[in-house]
Image 1 (cartoon, one colour):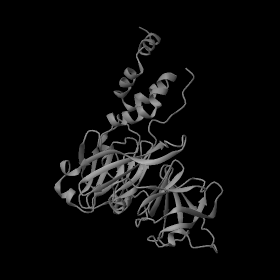
Image 2 (cartoon, rainbow, N blue to C red; image 1 turned 90 degrees about the vertical axis):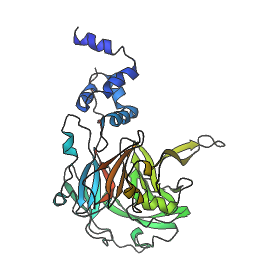
Image 3 (cartoon, rainbow, N blue to C red; image 1 turned 30 degrees about the vertical axis):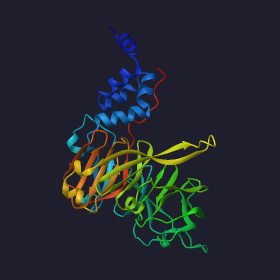
Image 4 (tube, rainbow, N blue to C red; image 1 turned 90 degrees about the horizontal axis):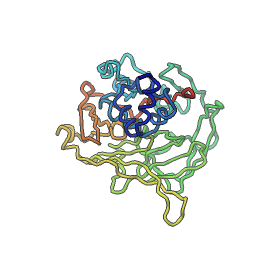
Length: 360
C-alpha cells in the first residue's frame, strides 16, 4: 500500500478517532502531523486538543524551577518535548545562575519588567527578554505637577480616581493618565498581585479585582466569588491565567477552591453581558496532603499550569512545592524546594506553535 492510499484510509476515520491517535503520539511527531494536510492542522490547533494533549502527556512536575533571586523560584513552562530526558526538567538552576539579577515587578508576553531599587519612582526600570537575553533600560519619566504616582499612595485608602504614570513602549514615552473607579477600589497590601491578560490589566484589591483595558479608557471592578473572605483570597490565593481563561483560587483552612471568570448574557437586556466567577474545582487538602502542610498558616496557591486548567501548584516556605491534578485528584510533592519562595509571575513559552503549513 503506498503513502497516498494510507493517508486516504486514515482520513476516512472520524475526527474523534483521529484525535485519539494524535493524543498517543510524541510531541515532535504531533507537530510534524500539522504539515500533512489542512484537516490535521485544524484538529491539532484547536484549544480542546491543546488542553487534552497536555493533560494526557505532561507529567505533573514538568515545570522548570528557575531562580530569579537567591531565595525565590519562578515556575517556567517550556513546550513539552517527550523525546528528551524528563529528569533534566526537574533540576532547578542554582542561585548563582539567576535569570534576572534585580527585583521583578511584572511579566507579560514573555518579557519581564524589573527594577534595581524599590524606591525608583520611575527611574531604574528595565525590560528583560529571557529568550534573547536582551535587557532594555526604560528612560525615567519627568516630574509631573499633577498628583503623585500610583506607588506613593496609601494602599489602605479606598480610591475612586487616581493617576498612573504609563510607559508606552511603541512610542517610547511616558504619559500620566487619570483612572476613575465608580465603585471605589482599595489595592491589596501585596504589591505583586496583578497581571496582564488579553490586553487588560488586573489588580487584586481588598474587596474586588480592578480591571483597566489596554487603551486606558475603560475601567471597572469584578467582585470576588461569593462566600469568599476577600482578605483570605489575597493572602493565600492566586489570580492568573490558565488554558486561556482567567482563574482565581484560594485556600480557606483545608478547603481549596478554583473559580473561572465567565461572561453571562443579561436576561432582561440581550447582548449585554456581565462577568461572574464559576466554581470549577473544590477539594479538601487534608485528604491529599501531609498534616504538616495543611496545618501551616502560610500555605498558599503558588500558580496555575498555563495550558492545563486542572493542574495547580501549592506552596509553603517550610514545606516546599506540591503539584495537584484536580481532575484526577492526584497530588505530588516536588522535593528540593524547601525554604524557598515562589514568584507570583510565571514564564510561559508557546505550546505547539501554529506554524503555517503548505497548501496541501
